[in-house]
Length: 377
Image 1 (cartoon, rainbow, N blue to C red):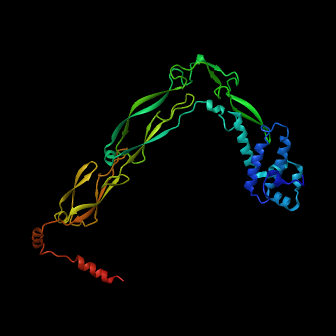
Image 2: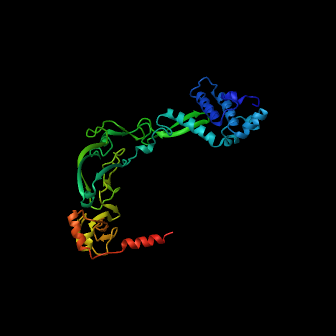
Image 3: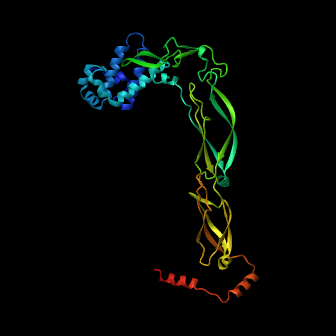
């Protein structure tokens, strides 16, 4: 077919892109499919279309055709069993997949668009996830919530079959296999496909009378009150498993589980780092340091007394042993406080009295700093 105008056959311009050629071929293959064209001209027309696409979809063949008006390989015509089919590569495979999926849809339960016989097997339901938000304080002491949740249970009367055994018979079409074979003509020949039986929907059985308890649904939906317990030591992202409270199963399969994901609100003062807690800018009076007083430090387990020392300064970090968080195994972290030394807001009269008391004391903190500053370059 050396003198044929392949561009005209596909209905595209000579400057058409690969995508435009592919789209045109797909459209024509659908149009002239044997199932749609009943006048007997389909095979001849498809051979012509396939021949044109074989040449124009291949860069080398297309270039030869554009130069000389013919291609040696094109004279062989199109045959999916000859060597020319291999030259199509992934582009031809895409076309084949597109057409196959379109026409397999007409088979109902056949092919990729329908159910397989495996769908008749018991399948566990999928898991579901929910979120719960608690305060920082609740994460240290633990907290419980009571919720009413829906749970799907396999019907106890029919064991998830949808009917009692006496009311179920073997499908007379697939003889219990749940499968049937279909054949369909495509542009590439006759394709045989195995799919779910159209009569029993792949179950292999026919229900004569549905179960009077579940009405054929195979599951019973029940509302149950559940206690959700968050133990001390939980961190954001931890999950609580509620078995059986997920999506219902299929064909009598067990339901999935529910996972409650815990989120903890940040605390105003505590900053958590593993099991340890930090309090930045913990205020203490300079008098507490001078007098080495004990100051009260709040921890998750209660108040603790911490003795100040003369050596403490602004920014000093002090570890409060076992003042941190618990984990689920009972281990406990520490609390680290960072001092922020404050000068009390005394009246002018008190400051004068304080100045008299300190009159005999002096230091060279400022002088030492200025001396070091002058040395800097």
